Image (cartoon, rainbow, N blue to C red; front, side, top):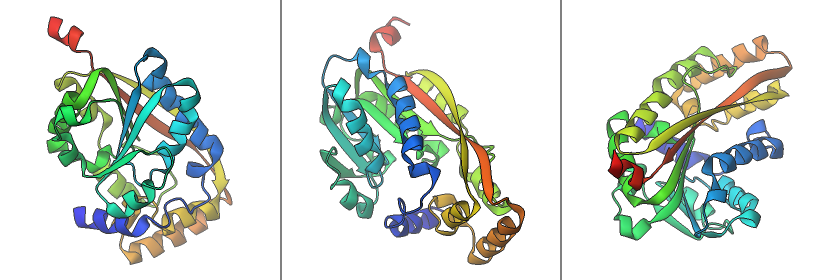
Length: 266
């Protein structure tokens, strides 16, 4: 399975933002950025803010997010972390990303705390790529790297989803999507105070946009289907779906707050 994921990300770098879908429309991005700005609680921080985007991909989202929040905040540094050099080559051209590091989550979490010392960390739609057996170790390392009073925000999606997929994609989605409860438990075990916010946005788009999104394998879960499964599934969706598709987009924001003073008094 990991080899399929590696091949997917090596191939998808040139098409990831090419699909004209709600995921890259300004109204959708603004909704996500506003939700993220709220849970990161930047207004509570007087010191310069150092942001790490773990699994930054091409850096497009965090670059826009930093531009979105900079007028109200003192942003000192934005570091993009990703295991694929193909993506970091693009991320390094984003004006708000000051440094990139080519590491996966496991290796990143073992970096010395004094070398990192960041105030905020984002994991956007990537926690499902971390094996359940290593979640505890990854979050332990992140907890040690994070400055006191710092925050981690994980953006993920539910295991049960209402996306208009064909059955094979639903199967792989449930197989690979990490239950957010597992993430919360691992974060609490290493010392984070954890809260969860669930946000929902009604979405409307054209059938052909959605079918192209799946066909182009923009998400890694689509690459798990064989070519025959993909062709059969797309044919079925083409027949069954209305020309205009509506569904609710649901994002889960898991917020971890590091407060050593409270933890030391427990």
